[in-house]
Length: 451
Image (tube, rainbow, N blue to C red):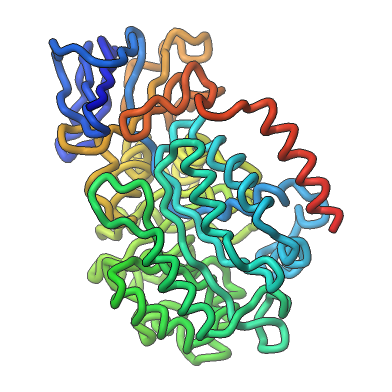
């Protein structure tokens, strides 16, 4: 039995169905699960004095490429759009190995945690021929070392340049090899139990790097294994034209013809869906991971989030790969999303609190998890705390539900708690010497990029 008491918080923003906010309240977590909220008169193994703090549900990242942390801010790709950007970067990514995957995962997830994220989904689909084994193992090891809740994917590509795809031959695999390793990854790592720290989805990369057969067989296998499906879709007009020319269908119709629609499927980006397709997503409960900063940086377009929310499409928030974002900060994503949609949609845009719920309860929904995403008894003990006595937050706490989107947070959160354990304390990771890791990772980046 272990317990953590967060005592006398100024506000506890629950993001629950009733949008409750508790003022001057306590939160008790016992054995990783929220036991009580309100006035708690019980002892605990550890107590956090939360006077002057706002407590929020842990943020949930629904789409990332952690390996890209080691290829961000490269001058040669800064003015490219997606297809050219990918062709250029694949020449770097083909040199991935286990050390790069482990340390880029530590770096990316560490930054996420310092900014309030407690669950990270990662879409890893690059498996170089010489270093294909053990990559997911290294990601889960990094997550365990940090204490974050990890939702990995066994991604895949089987169409190289010679087949009309974008990646080089050295990072694609045969359908049979991919499916065999997908089954192995699920059987070894996927834990479907409530409050699980490890889950796995099947995630072929995209319609322009994956064959019809791989998409079809991945959907069949995922449902046989009881896991979820994820891929990129409707990210750019180039992708739309590729699918139209090659298959004579729009991207969503093409994916639906292969079994890729339903409440166990979510797509990254989803920028270029038309009205009919948005209704189809809502009807089937098919989700979308919204990646506003990546979409802006690559000039891909603006996702129709106001329309999706109005229709009831499941939507979560995501940072996307660091090379198309150059950061792993879901709080920054939250504020950018708020400002982007205010600019694009004016009074029809989601509110600051709507965006917070997108990053918490909404993200939990598209990951198929009902045990995280809100603060209420019986949910996982995942949360983060922000002290409001910072100069940059003076007066900002008048509306604690909207503050993170409308005002934003400059600097790390004060505490992050995952599974009832403090993983960030006073703005610093508790399980990692950040200075030592930064030095080690920086040296590895230079070695990797020089290959």
